[in-house]
Image 1 (cartoon, one colour):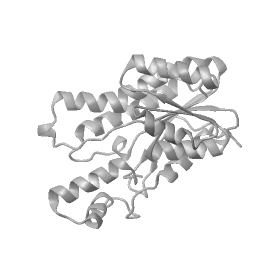
Image 2 (image 1 turned 30 degrees about the vertical axis):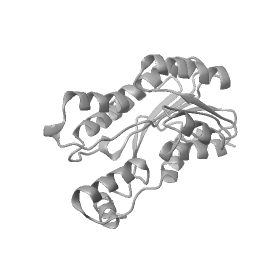
Image 3 (image 1 turned 180 degrees about the vertical axis):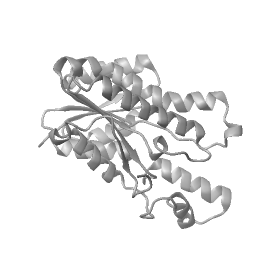
Length: 253
């Protein structure tokens, strides 16, 4: 029970990668708060965790983030580990990308992590202990066509990770990014469905298109991302900070 008694907050924790992280860290003994917008999904997931707390939160809204973290701290105490997992990806050609779309991608994928870090960082500094893990994407490490706004936001997450890690290097708080490739989640399934609908390809052909750059030729499993997060939370990873760890079958090196 390596994380026994630790309080973990996971945004976007009701499904997909966030749910897998919640399972893995709960099994390691942590007290888990999962946050998101869909309370029904969160409550159903929280019932499977021991202990688990569901808190409604819109990470793009500063007031919502403040209230959510106050509720989490009231239940389980100061946050020891923050996993910024909430995110969204919408595919659009650049010439159809208006300012509103760009702002939405920035709000969810970059401003959200910023606000959540602000909500719990001071307590981590005060106790000289903390882990901040930003679930980015291989889109933080390379470019992809038709997701310009999303890729720009994820590059921003990596810049935030690296700069904050330097500021906190002597304060007992580490900051890292985990960068999955295409993962078997709702986002990937939506992408597969869009490819099928727009091109007439089969589902298998759509999956092959998504995984063409992965040398292992497969979708990443959420549990693989969760295992990496667990390692970053461990005592053995106390010197790992400012890193972008790709979980992508060798797509980026």
